[in-house]
Image (cartoon, rainbow, N blue to C red; front, side):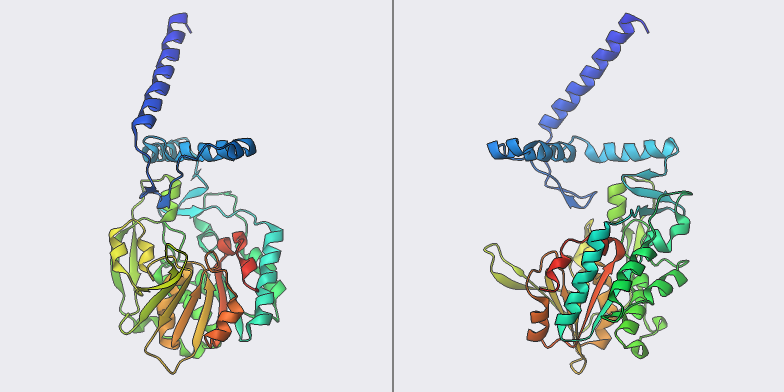
Length: 382
């Protein structure tokens, strides 16, 4: 390589760095990424304490990464480059058969898993009502045959075996989830671009949940419903994090009518005071947004109460993650009220809530990845 050519490359590289630095300086910071459907890091405050602890540099690195000029385009370009070089993964997401994106599932922390199972067992002892427990296998297990050959993928069934072994005799286990969902794996039971199950998958999950609740004889046949496709342009969270932009969107369907059903979200106002706000079983305004899955129940909430016209039916409490948002519609014919607690935001006594609200049955229901990683189940038995 000649000296002139070396100088040219160096100058070109410096010019590129200068151009990007200028672009970063001139580009306004964003609060939220519509493509990634998440809040972006903001410029951290420079304090002596933050600088001394190292928090400032860590926070600033996250800020620079999130606010990099043209970030969405660079993320997509990286995914394309990975695919062109033969790699079948980007940002922990596998590029799978049938235009499917599946998040990698790594071996969970064994101690956390053990503790989370212990918290469920302790809750069952204090609840004062029958308690069921279910773990939902995700695409990484049910659609494992779509994964690239040799792709690392920890066995979710082993997670369920370990957890259920610690809970046998203490709760009723929703074992049927592990047979029903794989039995329908040829059907669109999960989204291809999102980590959740589809409404069809939620229906099959509902059959397993009803069995665990001792109400298998009440299951409504699938052909009793009229499917309604509410969107053909859904790109979910896995699409957002993968950088992949070459797959087609998912369809979103609903099955259960929402006539006569009310949803109340219990939350806190800007002054930290408890307040309520009306929600809907299906909030169709979200269909005009990136976060279309929040159409179900209006998205995240610490505590939600779904009230049905079936006043003679029992009350159910679900301690749950977001998979239950699309499951709840199928449960509405069987309960007068369905109470939904999200332990990420709800820190009060769950057993006291059961007593105060005359709950008849309770269930702890999570997807395997969420249960394995959750640090909030410590609040469950309190």
